[in-house]
Structures are given as C-alpha cells and as structure tokens.
Length: 188
Image (cartoon, rainbow, N blue to C red; front, side):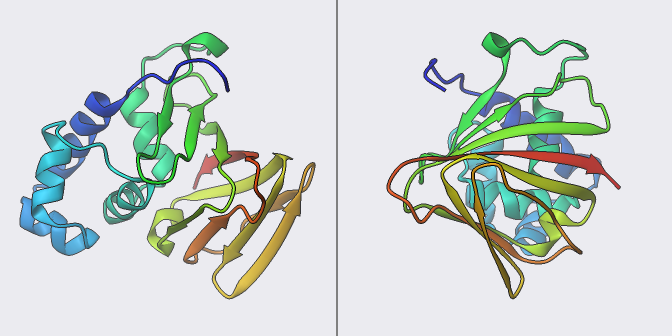
C-alpha cells in the first residue's frame, strides 16, 4: 500500500446525508441513534470533517449497515473490474488505519476490503455495525487480536476467522509493525 491515498471524504459526506435523509431523520434523530453529536454529523455531511473509523462505525450501526457497506455505497460506480490503481483508500485521521476497497464498486453481494492496522492501534465497533452481514477475517501479515464480545481471537498470518452472531468487536494490532488483513463481507 505505497501509492498515494485518495480522499473519499466528499463521497462519504454525501452518502451519510443520503442515508440520514432517506430515513427521514433529523440531525437530532441521527445523533440520538448513533451517539455522535449533531455538530459532528453536520460537519461530516458538509465535508468539513473527515470522520474516524469509530465515528463511521457508530453512524453505519445507526443506519443498520456494516461500515464497509456504508463506504461501499459511497464508492459505488457500477464497474465490474476493480484495478488496483483505481481502488479507493480511506485513512482514519485519528489512528492511521487504512481501508482499501478491493471489490468492484458495483453494489454486489460480496465485498472484499483490505485493512492495514498500524502497530499498537485498536479500533472498536458496536454490535450494530455487524448486524446485516456475514464476515470472515483473513490475516495476510502481522498479528491481529480480534475481540468479539467476550471472546478474544489471536490471529496470525494465514489465519481466517468466520465471525459469529453480531457482538461489539475490536480489532487490535499488538505488534510494532503493521498488520494487514482482508475482510470478506456478504450481506444477510
């Protein structure tokens, strides 16, 4: 992942507003459902703030969408081929976590997402962010400690974990170097 990052902030901003408005929710409704302040949601929708992975997880959970689905909807183009040079990369401004949308942006049932989690970084999501998809995590390099509710899984390079029922989850890289893993998601 050495190529320059593209900035999908505008597409994310638009998608968050579309999802909120399509449900008939006010900013106050969205804030109550997500636990994210009205001011932050407004800044995100206007493209004045790049949301963190945690904030996007809360917003997607409120919408009943997996984070990857929310981002995939923002990135959707209808193409069936996803060239490496054209794949969208989003970086969490808080942690340096990067997410590359590997799958074609056609709205298909399967999404492949490559994550690079810097050393010492932990990213948590509420159970609602996992409600509408089946997921598998395949570690490509490094070590990933995945907390799935009360259960803790330590995954090494080559290990693949199928997630169980929706639970609050956290991804943690205990190492000094980056951990790279692929998440495969299928809508329920």
